[in-house]
Amino acid sequence: MGPVAQKFRSGVLSSVLDSDKNEEERLELMEGFKKGNFDDIKELSKKGLKLWTAPMKLTAPSSSPLMVNIEGKSLLGVKTDIHTLIKHKDVSLVTFVFTALGEPHVKSYMTPFLEAFPEGNVIQMNIEEEWTKSWALALFEPFIRFKVPEKQRAQYLIKRGSVLKERTKIKMDNRLLGWVHLVDREGRVRWTAHGPAKDEEIQALIANTKLLMA
Image 1 (cartoon, rainbow, N blue to C red):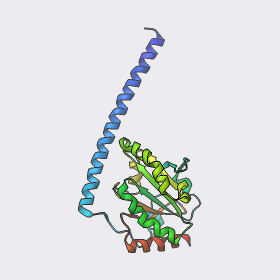
Image 2 (cartoon, rainbow, N blue to C red):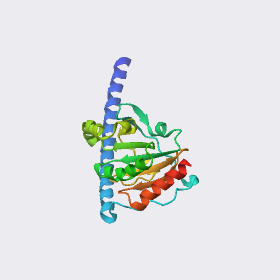
Image 3 (cartoon, rainbow, N blue to C red):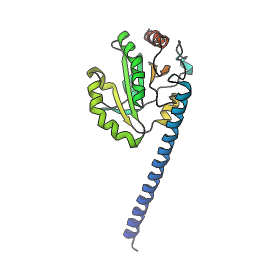
Image 4 (cartoon, rainbow, N blue to C red):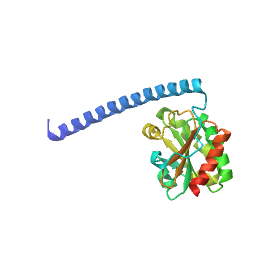
């Protein structure tokens, strides 16, 4: 066999092996998501939609993790990321939705936040981690665009793909819930809440935002 044929054969074999490896990785990923979904459902069945109540005070800067950087495509069709959108802002509210269940959770914080701070910096992340369901998010994108006010579309990002590492860093353990984070001018997560907002959590959100703006 000549060198060209050997190279061709090697390339085909490598491609097949890579394809098999990718399929194995996809299957492992799917199994991981199935287990994760089961664990999330089990946790909510025991604890309800509130795993804990958000603290009244900000976390100390030294104990606050940096906000993770996730890239997505805005409802205007522009690729951007969280760090770009929070840059040079005294305070930002960064929200995460992974399922339809989480949407009203996020809104229960966003609505009073924007009422108190009409020009507040809000970044909304809509993430579909399961590639088998990503087509559904693409299908509903026009409807999402219709629902989201025009003023918010540039900072409403859609992301398809796993963000497990990023979620772990800022302790978003349950994907069925909606999550919100107050981020300071240094990009640190100073306050986190999840699930439907309690009255005291809204009070804490507003008070802590004012502190970060001062």
